[in-house]
Image (cartoon, rainbow, N blue to C red; front, top):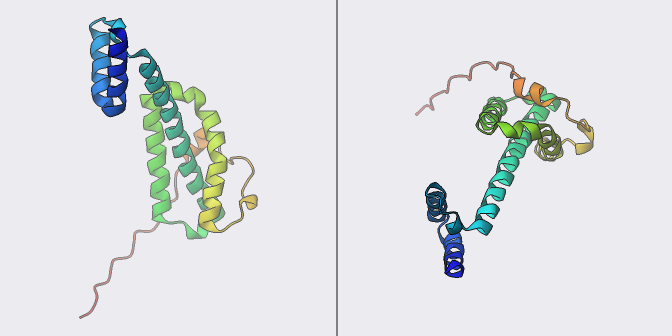
Length: 162
């Protein structure tokens, strides 16, 4: 019978992840540990952990990309760059608040994200990657505390004449 349950759970895991999760939760809550799809549960939890690390690293890369653009091309500073910086700072803080254990990995993820950020910024700006600082010019704390400069309000849109 265990083999049938395992095969059924494996098929359910592949076909409908949310229903599979609901069944795993039900088995845990009711103490039916023999009904757990252990192999897939371990895989699922491992994937969740990796996903959270990737999300933090990706957000650091976008934040660093825009900080580099501000540093390397301050004359081209745009509202869009500033909004991206603020948005990424907010999302990173929210992610760290929701998953406090990620904080113990953030320095490494920040360092790992830097090379991606340089590549993205170089591609977008046309500045050769070798002209960017070889190491992040900010600490994690400084990048998260960066306060973008104020831009003047946008000029009012002119109506087209008819």
